Image 1 (cartoon, rainbow, N blue to C red):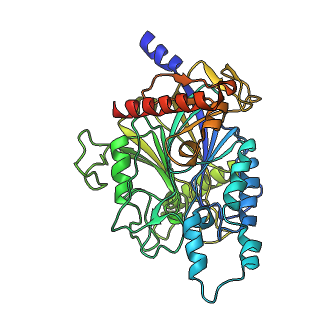
Image 2: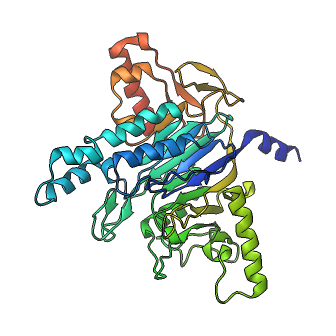
Image 3: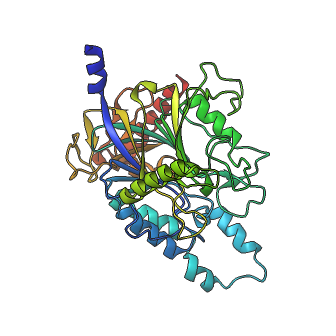
Length: 411
């Protein structure tokens, strides 16, 4: 009995608003009013990657009551994939007038900078890789993010050829995986009943077994499913062999909320009642069972856009338990302090990315001004760098931190 209390004391109840594929829509009065610890947007902030659509997306995110808002790009957000965007502009014949491109899309990197500047509002654009956070409620959260989706044509951003595959390097201890596209075999059915998910992504998630995997991209795949894993996975895990369907539970999908011609009057009435309830509260909800860590994953397809702008799907609010973080956090102003328990403290203070510009492009000067936190062994380890140590000392400490990370990863 005491061990159960100890476990509860070591974990923190955390609520997460999840949405995806808003495609530049304002969604006035259609977003949950509930307060959450974290908001996650799984990509396709825009329809055509126009600068004005990104501004609308920032306004939408600012209106959500969560101190930390994590965002990834989707294939429609192609201006965030600068190399791809530049290539597309070069391929257009006859060439577009530069002023016309700038009018709608801004300068190269301008859309990305707009999202980077939104960090003051708790909005974090995540590059592909692992990101660690300590939340305002004291919980420690590890997120793996990837905007990449398979495509034969490669006409959009952040895409790879399905024949070549993609390496989703999800680390052990990851709590939430955020990708734009779905894994193969889970909430990935198209209108034609084809499976559009990525097998490489499914295999990576199956091996890592995070508590939650959220995504979008396939609008008609909206829903949530608690998937139980088989005790022994295949060498190359697939949805056909490695899901224990007898222990898995479908939380909700479009077919459980919308009546069909095959429904009995009683079934139709039950669906309508559920849909009215969810619509009135502006979300669907799910909880991750605390005792199922390592044996089950809650998959959430949070695509908001349906077949049209008037056909909208509901966002999700998911409740989960997360491990308690260290006793100190870095506040938004860079100072060190005890964990905050009130909403006046900013939750997004600590972010450590294992890939992407947030870590790779950190200069020695930045290293001297910031506190790096690496928590790759499940233990609280901090490297506090002071601005007055100077450029040379900052380089030395940064190199030590990098070696430490490599050592931890090797373990």
